[in-house]
Length: 449
Image 1 (cartoon, rainbow, N blue to C red):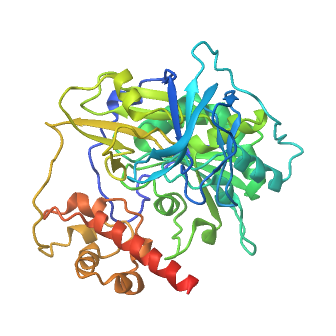
Image 2: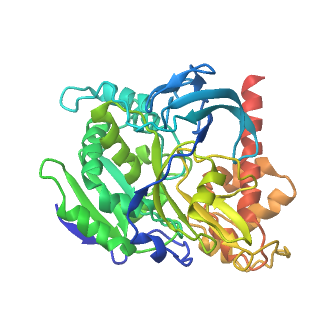
């Protein structure tokens, strides 16, 4: 299959924030040290929390099941290290909420070998068995959304998946985890694609990559297996092209309808790192215990891409890589869609793609918010052609139902482009995030009454 470039095909609008990727894009993935204490919240994904099945004082080995899936839209949790369950109690999370969790104390002299389970044989497994294997492995979207992957892969009745899209865009500034995975884990990606094609029934796979990762595109092209219908497509750099709807528009020139999903246009989109985990874990019957995280920013001394056990405390991570004394802000994820951290006692979870540290010099601090001047910059930036200015005004007056019903609030995926370009410093994306949560709560309340 050939590699080709889309010189002009891309989605409408969008922005071009500084990339800040050069400091880590060339750094290979390194194993991070094992923390003496791992803290595992059972809420690590969208959907029902995992249900703890171990007890305090129990000794566990790396890869052992600690918590089972709490329902269909849920995944299990596996031991990232061999050790002893110190206690089961509430743990802090990035949302500020305390949730049930497991405190796992590492065995100090353990080799930390990973326990294998029952493999999912590609040749003989049915699509349903592959989906079950993906759920049993605890795999969620590693691009940041952390949606249970087996649910996304299940093609609804009456729909067909024609194309499997691998998302290697990684348009968030600073983050380079997917870039390194594509350069270093090509075999796992292609094995994952084999499982994914069989699970979804897709006829072909396309790996979408932005032009600033041409080395990754060239590497995957050179490694393309002859038995897999897969191609590599390079698209121009633009934020937020990593959104699956934007990626589909750029690569396939198809538009996912308002309120719809990629499967409505015959596509299933999976992050490249997620595909690599499927290709690595299913043949061995393992569960996910670690993930690649970019640790960078002006306040970090040992920048890099690290393979970090899930549950590693953020405070331990920062101590290991070293940070400046005058750090001002820490983000989990990228600067556009990530979340500012208010508590360093939270842990790395499955959806953690990056840790960014800024000093007082780079941090914006609290900016004064001015009235909207109706400049239209947010309208020009919005990749979904929404009207952020109007939505922001409605949010101010708490007209949440009107926002959803007349101005398509729920289509917003909170990319932050509108806030980025606003000359009045209006935190539009924060308004929309709050408004969407209120709309969801009202709908839930209506269903239960």
